Length: 73
Length: 321
Image (spheres, rainbow over the protein chains, first blue to last red):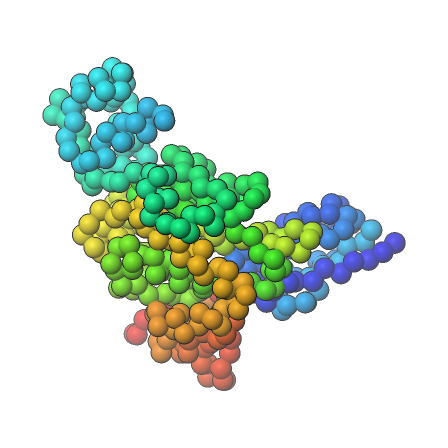
């Protein structure tokens, strides 16, 4: 089993989290949407698998390169 | 063109037209004219009169016209792979998000039935009352390289309004366009990445042109429109052309040089600099003095414990008590 950490590409805040821990994701599934300077930026699954860890919640600030969730495949 | 769109075109001049003459020109009965008039009224248009006396649009409008928009854009139209001008759509941003390559593509509509604002909020989109324009623009850079795009789009919009409508505007971070402290235009940007590391940015721009009172009641902040500010019916085709031209000029420069290339121009339009403001960040809010923006487009705030930079949140001018 491989684990893949998914990092935020931007500094911003979490607008909404679309999936929950335990959910299956396909490559390209939108896991959450971040907001930075009025841009809405989706965080997409880079690989298919199971979402095992969601580390942020709506309203929280995130930094560039911060790991926001983990996928096991 | 739908019958409703044709009827609107006949009424656009703001002169009175009898139900009978409208029916003749459209090839429909007076009763059918009345039904379409009602539908236009339901869509937010203010139409005075009744069938006998003649129907009259309270504020004449200029309908969107593809040929006029292209002419107003000038040579820069060559930088766009596609231009779609629609009568009614659910959301111009959705169409631009889903538009097939090649990009860039611009989508305009007279009316949106499900216009999108920030964070899924509805964006009031009455028929003909505003300019709704979404542009899907391709970037080689991934999302991280696009910090400040929001501000650059705001600048292009403010410049276009000034040029096409001769109106002084300022920008409220990150990109609300204001006239006399009231919101005149707004922008929502949605980014989509692709596996190759490229990125599609959809810039959704909405400019209030002549909003009917009935719609205006639903807006939760001080607002204005071009008609109220300039006293003239805005030429939306000219405005759209200026906007498409400005975007085509600034976006390639932004992709190469980043926001820093525009910081000085942005500063000149900054509505908040030097003001005491409140920044709402989710449940929290903090107060400080706005110091302008940095080279990435982040808001600089002087707070009691020093200077901080912010890329998220909703900022408003603090009212003195």
